[in-house]
Image (cartoon, rainbow, N blue to C red; front, side, top):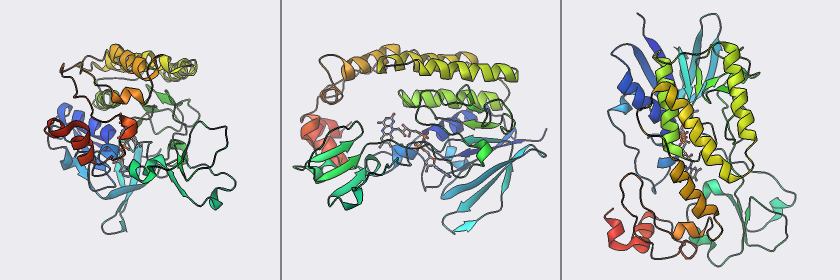
Length: 358
Ligand SMILES: Cc1cc2nc3c(=O)[nH]c(=O)nc-3n(C[C@H](O)[C@H](O)[C@H](O)COP(=O)(O)OP(=O)(O)OC[C@H]3O[C@@H](n4cnc5c(N)ncnc54)[C@H](O)[C@@H]3O)c2cc1C
């Protein structure tokens, strides 16, 4: 039997979840895997600067990753029923000839292209204007009046502006008929199971033969487990242990989930929705871990949005892990008084020696 070729775009948590499960599930020579990653390392947003550790995972997953290689173009050829993927070798600044794949998994994230709205007069503002994407350290803002744009409606004189206006789903490398167009919602449209591309019309036509898969496209609440389950489902589908129903059922199903998501009116509705989505996937693909995280969600919600709590004060609290039973050490300085976001500052100032050994 000829082996299938699988292309994974991006080696962030979504891409690594796919590689991790492919590594465990596939038999020798059954599937050939190539992961294109535009940076020189894996981990995506969890490894974007000196503050975060290198992404570590089981097995030699990097054997499949071609680093410093950015995907420039993906198109689907109906005649040969294959994807053609063209990449650029960033080290050599060279566009390479395209390669054919049976499956393409889009795992390039949606929290890296800032949504930067323009306002009249903004170009005349004399202070620093930035997006939360570029925020690393609060110390440059100490003592300043800072306008954080994200929930606005009043006038004030300020020294600096930070746009907290979110990110755009941006897939410039995909042909238009393959490109997911959505804002940051709980269940993006045109994706069966939140994963299988159903085409721009959502009806299963012009969709890359049910073999274009998106991982991690929802608004994320319980991130890593969520991405892991999607990766597991996708791998089970690729190896044939999960099968698709008839096209109309797929269409009806994604529409139902979008309708359900639109009925959510407050943040309290998010956890039950997202945990039921995770169970919906895990029940079908036999994900081997407990995904009942309702109690965790409840705790987060009650601390962040409860009557005597808040999104700021909950950061000063110390929590006990559901899985290890360990309680985090209390912080020395309240979140709002701590301007140094460096690793050294975070560990030594906030937690002292005990923290530095963690
Ligand atoms: C400032 C910030 C803080 C965050 N903090 C948290 C947090 O505390 N907790 C949390 O759960 N989530 C957080 N998130 C959300 C975070 O994005 C997700 O947790 C997670 O990183 C999503 O994983 P991903 O693999 O889908 O995307 P990413 O982590 O963005 O990884 C995508 C990968 O694809 C690569 N890539 C992109 N385009 C191409 C291309 N054309 N060719 C080849 N490679 C490509 C990128 O280089 C990257 O390595 C944060 C996001 C931001 C922006």
